[in-house]
Image 1: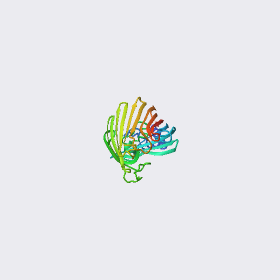
Image 2 (image 1 turned 90 degrees about the horizontal axis):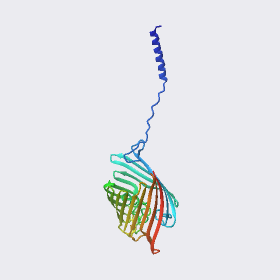
Image 3 (image 1 turned 120 degrees about the horizontal axis):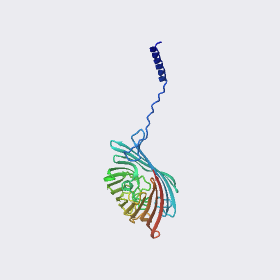
Image 4 (image 1 turned 135 degrees about the horizontal axis):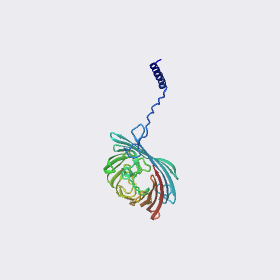
Length: 361
């Protein structure tokens, strides 16, 4: 055997061994693609894409614990009080926001559910808000345009006790043109006139009607200045109210003044839920430090005919908000009401106080 034959034989043997090893080799399967949660920053912080969709979701809420007591805030009424006593409340709130880009703009939804336990009446579950927001239209259940949906309330936890600034929440359809936070805006809508317990009735006691409540308003915002005017018509009692408000911010100091007029001062309606022809609300807040804010609300109203013998004329709530750490705030507050007790024939001066612990997330 010559050298050439030896080399050729060795090469053939090596090729056979290599082929056998290749046939027995284990090839790792490629990993299947994994879909991680993606951050969605198109609609603000906290949103993320729901896996497999182009819809952005934001989850939030808070846990709140309150202790209240005194003539104004005691016993079993939140707010309103009545008696030297105290009560407690714990609330857990879940907030869900969604948003999707469409050819007509953002399609948004918002839902807020409250789970609550009072010391005096057990637990409850309440839909605080639930609506669709699309192309300027809002459809669903939320604050009335007259109360918190356009003009808003005060700074304190008890921004009203007796001097109520209007209906709170309704099923509704409304349209808003313009940016409420910048420049001119206009809003108008219809609200369900029969979806709240204790609706006001006509003299004949009739409450049923196919006619909805009607509300509308105009506003202007520029920098630290805002001005709003809103009106509401109660289709059941066929009366209504007008309310205007001015907000101003100067550095760490902010304040507002709000005034309302009732078309029939002898009676209340869905929008004029104060007694008498007129009512005035004032408020101020000072951000003393990064963590501490000092605030107060001061409310006045006309005497009016009223429905009871203990009608409030002046009330105030003042307090502090201290952010212990980001997301956890402690708020002590004191409230005072000066009213006229017709049974006693003299002024009644009632006090109350509360403290709130709240963790937002």
